[in-house]
Length: 210
Length: 354
Image 1 (spheres, chains in turn red, green):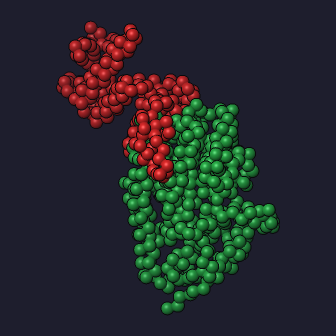
Image 2: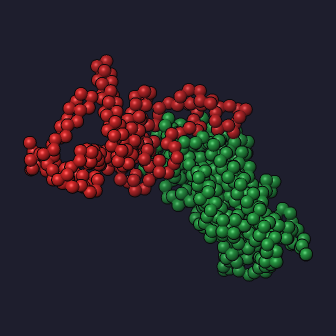
Image 3: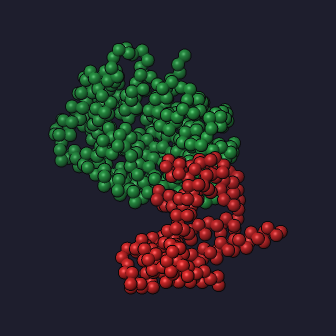
């Protein structure tokens, strides 16, 4: 068996993952495993490899690559289909190009918002096709919504949207967990994300058949 | 021909010793157009033309004259006047693309088109009557809303080009006159304190302690995750406390350094009354000191309608040239300013002698 990373050395560590009955196996040589741990964890003795830290090493490097592949690359190439705003110019100027950018760059927006703002969900006034104008209380910003606002602007509708946003949320929590090196939580969250994503796929298939 | 128009800042009824003015701004964008950064020139023009048609409607519904213009077609001097009187934002001032403005006759309501956002509604008033202008801005917002479709998302609320405005799109601010807090060095502490309430402090004509005229703006930093009324509430609460502290410190300062304070006030009056050239910064500081003297009862202007803050607005460079069209252009702006202040500064009727 050859190492998955360097594709040269003989694999001495075999890492098996079982998620929802789905088994995945990864093989590493001890050089690569130690390197992974150095990067992820700092100190690591090659000859003495405690299972906890190798796991965390694997998880963190997995997460690093996962985040890398999710954030810079995917978004760097990501261009808003509506206005043509690119991820890199959004990051540079901190200005969005159109309402649809909120969907295109949602992953980063959530993180950016956390840095600038306390909450990340709107709780205030809702525009007309969603609210009743009360002539007695023209100054009342808290006009009661008549019906839910139309889903113009961003995202998809209804429960599908809710699900995708909860996946996004979980991903952010996962990121946090990895940053805090809470790998137990990270693993749990990752499983949950996979579960939700599979569910989504299944739904799509069902819809597709109809 | 020229009709005398009372601008919002000439209103004396709501005068407050600490709160100079209150302002509400709503950032809104329309569906079907890219935000400012990605908006094509053709779309910008279309947007401006489209929104400018709203002038007639608001004029009819508010029953007050409203003006409208293409801001990018104004001369730099005209734009500067609008900027100095807070009718347009720096964004709108410096943009070369098509930009528009709908302005009420008293300049208390301004609708800026294609600045940082497609539409920015601003309402401003003298003193601390935030409720009045919040109601006004909300009414204008509803009117525009019934005409055009706003870009809105369930999660993020009103979608704006900057994440600093998303959600409510609301920036509410009080312009505060804080000489005692500034002089006593408590400004930085207040800045940290109010940050906990999601508010921030900004110098108006400069930053931090250096803001001439001791004018500082307190506004909300957070725009999402809070309702409009929450924002107004925390702002009002904090500004109430700042106001009380400022007044307390003014009196304490006077009690401790009577001679020094009185000397400062009268010296300021003297310089303003007789100086032949006055730089803007100096003039602002001197005016602030006589306002402080008025508050402490050291001096009382003979003309009770005299308003320092209005004068502070009028001595800004572009405003000065605009309100004195016949002035000798050979003169430096500083001497024009000095002459204007000499003319406007009222006599003092009360001089307290102890």
